[in-house]
Length: 376
Ligand SMILES: [Zn+2]
Image 1: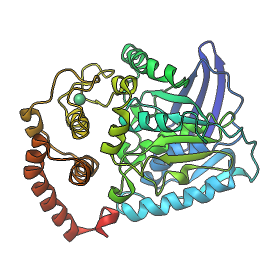
Image 2 (image 1 turned 90 degrees about the horizontal axis):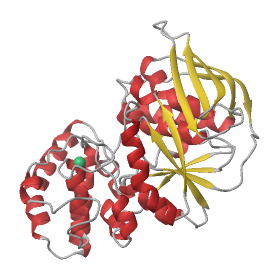
Image 3 (image 1 turned 45 degrees about the horizontal axis):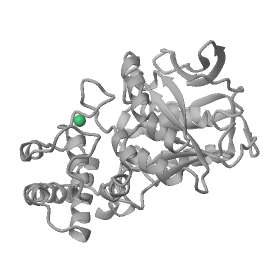
């Protein structure tokens, strides 16, 4: 397949179009990225755009001919990304070749400032709190419209921006907005590729920033693999001149919440839900909402301002896990509870039932193949 990028300046900002042609099924694909309110220079290298479709290429076994320049580090890194995913999912992905028109070792480098991907979730808020004003010199956050909130709901996206604005204002973080149809096209498995897609958006700011931060989910001692965002392969989405940083893996989700809970503005801004009819809000009852409410409860906060009312035992009983990342989130809460906090009756009764289920499932997985680092 052939990968080209076109840029145009529109009234509302810069549009970059990633065009895929010469695909095996003959179907061209146009992916747009609108950088709202921006006036970008032409991209010097296309590292990020290759990241954006690497899972599509590996999944369909198509080599990528890049109409443009890439950095040598990006090429080398993507070879290792492929090796990792072909090892994790040998039945799904194949090793492919990436052939740019030219390779550079020395792209222009921006000043040593950072931009962080920002969804409004606990991991993103923790990363913002931690790095605003430290050695990463974080001064901007990137919100993507088209990932958690669909393109056809601009009203909900505006409400999300409104929701997090007081938090960003307090930390002097400038919101930068990207709108893209890449997730909506569903050309690759979202749970494997979401961070690679996100990294493409971050790379587009490489003329201004040296580092693109992403708040990771599971801590180093509870990694879930394979998973689209992890500290093994996230850094390999970097190129010369722009580094993707997997941030926060030294902390469990409960430990992150313990820090966020000390900040009322940050607590009010948190938006974790993917199930609410209005995606700028938290439904309070889905797995992610209940898990987050239990995280707060574990650190002594019964009614955090990001949720209405108090959690009920019935809401906890109704939780069903659909992936290993969710299980790990609950497990980390139990570890924190065991280590640092005295008994919270609701959490303990939850784990009395759920940990038994998790152990059984984990043992069953042991017999098939290792999935988590700690299982190996
Ligand atoms: Zn929810």
